[in-house]
Image 1 (spheres, rainbow, N blue to C red):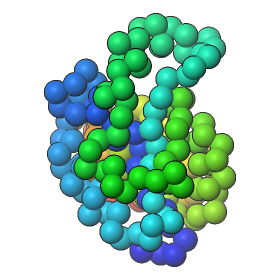
Image 2: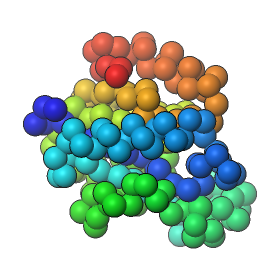
Image 3: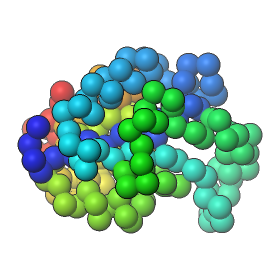
Image 4: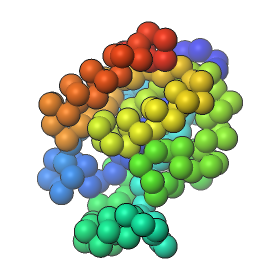
Length: 175
C-alpha cells in the first residue's frame, strides 16, 4: 500500500446485517473483505465511521429522527458489527450524524493528510456515495473497493458504480 493512502470503513453497524431493518446484500462478503483489507494498511491509516442520529436535529433531520425512532434508540442496531470491533479505538472511530463521513470535522482533517482514500462500508447509494463526492471535492484520489461495499440491492449497487464510472479514471479507480 502507498504510504499516503488511507482505508475508510463507513458505518459497518448491526442495522445493516441481513436480519435487520436496513439490511444490505452481501454483508458477509463485505465484512470478510474489510478484515483482509485492513491488513494492507498501517494502524494509523485505517479509519471507521459510525452513524448516530443527531441529538438536536434541524430541518429534515427532525423528520428522519421521527421516522426512524425505533432504530435510532436501539443500542444494538447502532453498534458496530462484532467482527470489526477489534480494530476500533478512540483514535480511529469517528461518529457522524449526516450521510457524508466528512460531516465529522475531525475525520475531514485526518483524511486531508492522505492523497488516496480506499472506500469500504455501507450503504453504497447513501453514505458511501455522499462521502465519495466530498472526497473528490477535496482533491482526493478514490479507490472504490467494490467487494468491500454493500448496497441495499444489486440494482442500487450497479447504479452507484455507473455514476462513479463517469469520474474514472481521473477521480475514481475501482478495485
